[in-house]
Image (cartoon, rainbow, N blue to C red; front, top):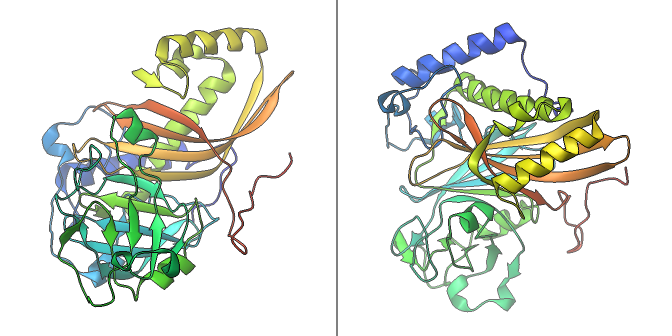
Amino acid sequence: MLAKRSRVSGPKPLQRLITRFVTLAALATGAQLPLLATASEVPPPPLAALTTDQLVLAANNAYSLHSKQEQLPLSLLQMRGDYRYAVAVDLSSNQLFVFANNDGVPELISSHFATIGKAGYGKRREGDNRTPVGIYRVQSFISDNALPELYGNGALPLDFPNAWDVQQRRTGHGIWIHGMPRDKDRRPARDSEGCVVVSNALMPALHDNSELKSTPVILADSLRWSTRENAEGVRDTLLDTLEQWRLSWASGDMDAFLGMHDKNFRNAKQRMPAYADQKRRIAAARKKIDIEVDEVEIFMYPDVEHKAMAMVSFKQRYRSRYFKDITYKTQYWQHDGDRWLLQLERNVDAWPSHPSEGKLFARVSAD
């Protein structure tokens, strides 16, 4: 259903307009959204500024696996095709969910109890005993024989702090998903120093189904769920935004392109003023360029301050008369009540494929 896109193509204009109005109605009324849904993962469509009341949808904390199977988590709007599973943890209810990647669409297959940090969630500094809120990737697997008994029969280290955490000056390290001592069947809801703790029975499956440095792990204060129709509407507004970003850059319309960036935008080396100057110089010198965006992945980013945020990752091909390259990017977008603005951009490593005998092989070809 969610095919890979070479130029971020999307629905026809009339279809997009209808979808946006359907999404707007759902956002304003909470219709067909009986489960957790708040502004942190439900962005308003770019039609007009919405009030705070319109951004806050109906919430119901009752846990029902059956009802959730009929809905989609807004954190996983569009998944890449190169990994099989994703993990999402609802930190406020101590529930870990495992999703299969069904052609880019998450399919809920199981749920499990999970212990989180002693001080709750929303990690800000080293040693605060809180579990982070954000989106991370499984980095490696630590086997039973390399772990103290406290960590059970395995551990999956995550890449906390990520680029957004660093931007927010959050500190810490050693955030894992791991097992528990063998003399325990269950640990209290809040009992770790910030890690996510699950039963030893679950760890082998999590290990087997994780593609290293690729499988996403969502750590959310509260997961938000939506109907498929509404989730697709939210996804399409972000695909439209990404397409506007691509087209304005490729056409050399630097006013439109730079206008999609927040005044506090940063990439790895530059703040907005230096970045804008460089982009204008390059656009004037290179004239015609071609930019393609493929392998798009979209997450609504969980945020304890309940800002409408999105994390978008993609493969980018850039061609001009004198230069061409392939890069992999992750971008962080925020909605200001009227439109999406790009906050942060990072080049990242090429997506790895399935690990084979402990080795990782990049999917990017020599082109």
